[in-house]
Amino acid sequence: MRQGADDMAAGDIARALDLPASTLSAHLTVLANAGLIGATRHSRSIVYAVDVGGIRQLLSYLLEDCCQGRPELCAPVLDSVLPACCAPAGRNNCC
Image (cartoon, rainbow, N blue to C red; front, side, top):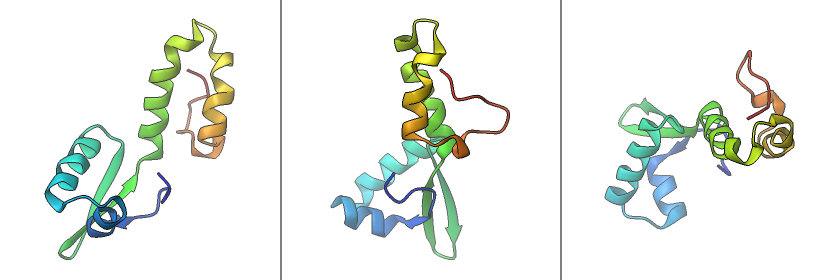
């Protein structure tokens, strides 16, 4: 998440997190399948980037119960975590 939507090579991620490549690969596969990151092949390497829309959807889902049917309660939380400029087109910033 700190890297934002900028691509980061799998090897760089492994070094930053101090994880073995096989462990990281399994985690990245799960995150990609969940729609939380995207993967792009560049020659022999794969680079990964956060899918801001997927993260926003996850946070919305997790905050939905806290709203108790009042999305205006959650909108400030989402806006502080992911700015409105990151919202998918056609969606508002509520749970």
